[in-house]
Length: 274
Image 1: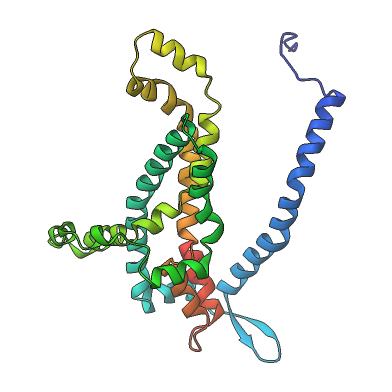
Image 2: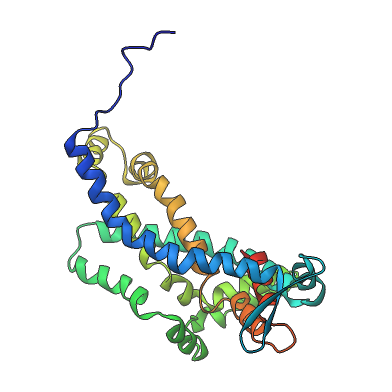
């Protein structure tokens, strides 16, 4: 069967190979870091989960009678783990749209022509730099992660009639509202970068056709940043799931360092959570 001569095939020119070379060079440190610090630890933790660790003059892995004993023990012995996992999943469903909507609104404001725009961009990104794990724990302990007027509002008393598994995530959402909004710095930058790629001529053409700002948002802005909504959603889920204030992470730490359970038990719990 003869090949179609009209099929387009990009030529491997010297310029294209040079671009590929620079691209691989820039991502090489990240690839090396992932292979050394992530993949090795990931495989090692999986080995720990399917065995029993004995620390006596060194680390020895002993095979289990049933390789899935550690995984089964998590659901049998850890009563709080499924409940904490379900509360986190429900809280994530509530927090994710709040963070995405807040990030998009702030990005739209920072992309407009306002005075001291660079200063406001720095202010919204500053929590990403200073809000590390220990800092967030100190701030949370001092109660600065909530808005007093909201936390003391009668809204929570109205919601108290709901089932506990629904009431608790909603109350946590209001009690940690500032903390949640602090996790929006990267998302704001991503949305801002996407908004700056929209040609201004599209908005000018829409205004000439009589479109309002609301119609321009739904017809031009939102379709443009729609792929970034998915990207920011994935980033937000990973950030919330691995944050220092996550109760599941703290539970895994406690189990891993417990004398009666140990690293194998904690590794199995970590893989279930993953």
